[in-house]
Image (cartoon, rainbow, N blue to C red):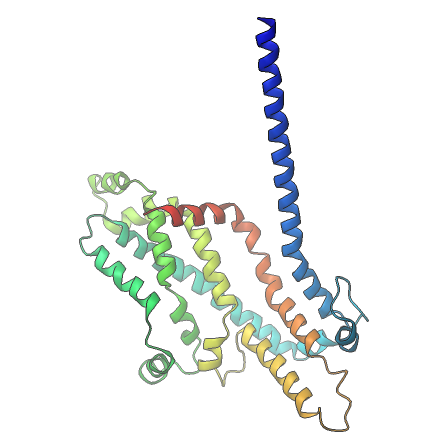
Length: 305
């Protein structure tokens, strides 16, 4: 009996040792991967505070080389416009995310309902648009000539409210919610909208956090539609405003390259890094608030259906 007990104890010790080794390896691997992911951002911040001439000769390092804030002076040379761009982008991101979440969640709920007899046909049309699109020219004509949204912020807000991929993700997540909840609401005499708002919507926190983050990132990083539809507005979205600053600096450096003017001090690389810091810094603060829902929303939405 003692021999059997000692043998079982030894097996348990070996299993604990193997489990501890696997855990230690996983922790070390995750730490190394996290450092590798963080390193480019650290180098971007470092380059934004570096001297243009120094990094052109020595390259970008983890620490600033030839400390300089000239790139930030150029990027922030017009505080009124940079503040206005931040306000425009924040308003577009906030309103677009809220409205988009509401519309996408309602659409996903409708496509999830088994009693909606044409749900598969409508879902096919959503999926079809991910494979084929009309192209830039018809979209531009539709937006400017027929909707008359040239130099209107709605031209940036409306096209991104509903994404077919996000609708499919929401629909798949809905499949994890028992249909009996909807049926119980019907028994109590509630309408479809009441059932959705009171019973289904509160259960969508992981999906809402995940899709909300995608929507917020899309609106925050948007610049292409702004370039097409908002050419004459004073306050442009942040990404497009910073994009213009970088292009103007690059064009100025290129135009002076063949002249007697010394262009080495004109920041281009450091300016790109500084604008990247200004653009990505605020949105990074959003992720910690939705992190606990993000992974579960992605996993559930991707494996269902």
